[in-house]
Image (cartoon, rainbow, N blue to C red; front, side, top):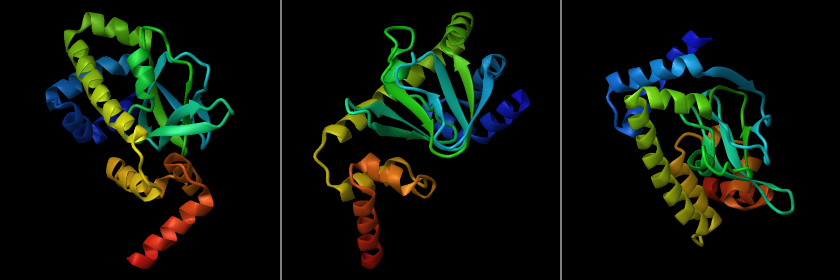
Length: 208
């Protein structure tokens, strides 16, 4: 299974290298440092990797499948705020930024499809970062990317956008993911009912 981790890391190398602007040599070194501390985690559709109320102490790297993360409203509804697929971390940006400090407890991580992830604990990552400066540099680059991504998502969240605009934004941010996400999930993500979402898609089909 740990050899599989190397296979999946190699499969998603170009995406991660481009996103974090690192060389193949650095990417492979980070992979070798992570390999001893990861463990495989499989989840069925709708199974939780992290529940609301649980401290964020584990990072989940998606090898296969799609995950969603979000928060619970005061009424108990689960609201998806972000998706993650192969090569991504499944954790909410807020949880990753809070790791090692006041650990966030309001975000969930759930499998949108059946998935395989590799998990590593925050304490193990701290130990590896302390022993290997290249891991610390990679971690800081990752945080920089997360802060940028988080800022863009927050701006979009507070913007007054129509359902059509939100759907277009989803397609731009997650190219190719629409066919892998259930319509009811996507409807909730853009803030409409499943019935209205179906109408929206039918209007699009007539136009095209």
